[in-house]
Length: 242
Image (cartoon, rainbow, N blue to C red):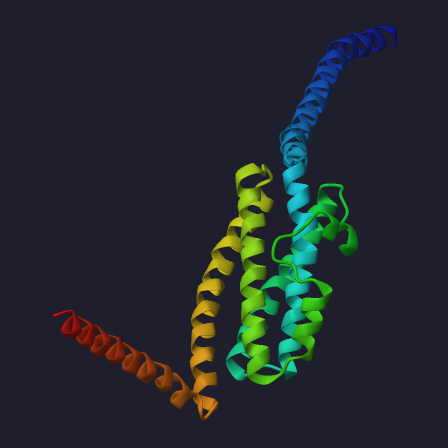
């Protein structure tokens, strides 16, 4: 009995260290395998969250109320504008509505908040309509509305392009800069489109005026008569001189 017990104790003394080493190795491997992904992901996430400056924040805070006014103007076109301007306004609203949501979410991710419109206006935003100008647009209808809408929205877009260009130059947040580039590209194209429509609207309004074509030819004929009269006067003067 004593001999058997001694043999067992001898065996345990040899096996236990081996088991302990195996368990330690397994725990070490598990620990290493579990920490590698989080160690790689954490720095990347922190860097992305920290990559912004005052220009990025200002761009988002200013562009939100700027876009909101463009959407307000687009709403007015629903029951006042002609078909072409109404379609344009619908496209502007469809584009800028989601951008407002993106800008708001961007500010939240940066730990910032949107500014109240009154405070944003105090900073001065290029292209924004005053309350009086917006009221003027609200009172207009038909061709008058179309012309005012195009003129005002061109100026509004030009202001947005200016703000976006400043963000592209000074911003560091990739999402903010990318959105600013999209604003420049889209709104410059719409400015060109609206300038073309404004010229067309002017021609159409002249045609609808009835007497406008006669009025437009009248000055030309008068100018011609005046030119002829000047020529005769010069000829008479030359003749008298001779």
